[in-house]
Image (cartoon, rainbow, N blue to C red; front, side, top):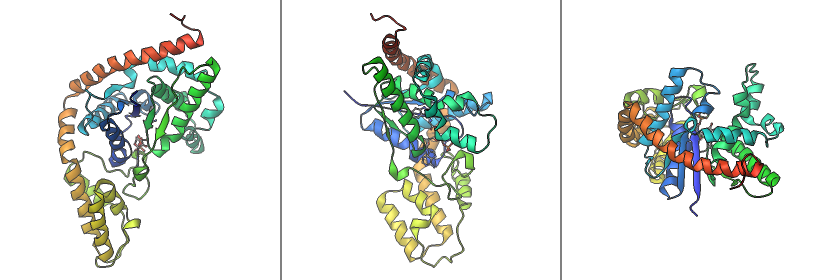
Length: 327
Ligand code: ADP
Ligand code: TRP
């Protein structure tokens, strides 16, 4: 049987280069390799933090348009919005009843919110890993491509599936595994820390060439003169270039670093390479984002197919736990 690969992206902000390299691109490659792919927009996960109605709607369309602009083909890949598949939420309750509270107490996202002294941690944030397990288990997923930060969540989904299987006495749920691309596990932002919406250090994917150039101009560099040799391994600019360029292009730029390159030139090389990479997807993105009704239509069609599948898994679970009678 073809292996199923599934992943979701939360609509919590405008997609950036870290998302492209860590999430969108590895997932789209797996779909191209012929795996049975399901990619979705985790809008109810976003609700744990996004409370502005207009913002949630806009980010949802932005993430949808990004998937499509980067090459997701809805004819081949099941593409939907989490909130359109109510079976996921019913399964989430069942899974919660098999989840030890201690597993959630130890989840990084909750622990770091606690450590930051958040006084308003909502139950959605706390039970986040259970809903994520339902996203994954409702479709018999085998592989879940995610960034390193999501590894623990997939591990919790595995634990839940194994516990359910153990308690009902047979394999009612398929046990998934995370797939982490180590080369692009942590793409740096303009300040050298992990690129993240929450740090305000991102390079948005579909900025214009001029906007992007301005952002790249802000990448912090030292005061070594242009002719001085530079170590590519310690340069954020080089790291970003390497992540989008071919190995041969990266080697050519590394050689220029070693023989001396001005930071302005290095930034220009990065800006040009990104423009080359993103000009076509940006044009597609602009077309898609201008037509939200079309995006909604594509997602609704995907949801129908996703529901049909999830219904089967949910029924299997309902029988296994004694809610439905076996037929
Ligand atoms: P952010 O940190 O900007 O809020 P998300 O948490 O919404 O990003 O991440 C969405 C997806 O993109 C996840 O799979 C995550 O692992 C990946 N991702 C986010 N930032 C990076 C980065 N800097 N490098 C690699 N992958 C990333
Ligand atoms: N938690 C993931 C993130 O923050 C998004 C997500 C929700 C997800 N459900 C999922 C990822 C299921 C993979 C599988 O990036």
